[in-house]
Amino acid sequence: MVKNPLFGVISYVDVPSSPRNLSVVECSKDYIDLSWQCPETDGGSAVVQYIIEKRDVTRAAAAGAGAMWMVCGTVAANELSVRVGKLLQGNSYLFRVSAENRVGPGPPTELPEPVVARLPYGTSDRSFFSCQSNVCCRVLLLVIFEKQAYVVVFALTSISATLMF
Image (tube, rainbow, N blue to C red; front, side, top):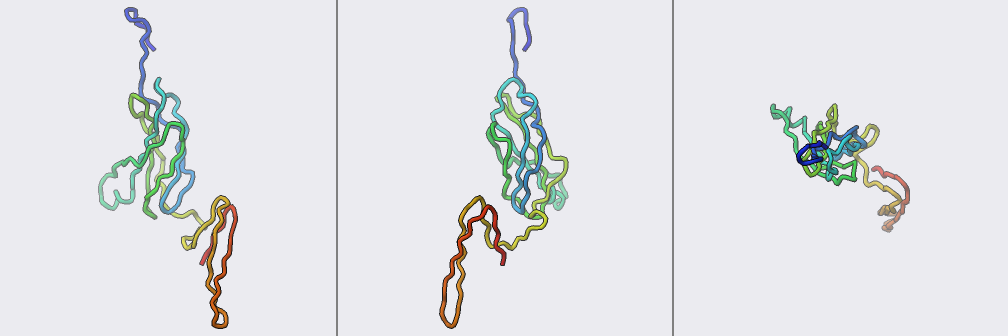
């Protein structure tokens, strides 16, 4: 706010500052989960959304050109995380997030290093299916014994289970 002798108090608004502490929460072969904290200042107007951008470093290097930033999503002001999907396994990506208020988007905060879209260390890409969050999974198994066919059904209820073949 500025005090003007002719008009009294004049308030002004600006774009928000950069979101803080951008980090990778989870990484897989085709998505990466990001999280961040609110900007230090909203510029005098409430943040209305966050803009998430990605840059495919691998493709840019292969093409011999500078990688361009692409908007890959927006989330509401009360959401401080996002899952960025449709990534190519093995490619390296940079991400940045900007806060936007009614004036416009503020400066972005960017990951310091590229992230590779890949399965976490120690996991396999051969899983038949996974059970998550107490979801009941059924496995059908066809068993042939003495020229008779039997269908065996297993029901799994687990916090996290993966069947491998």
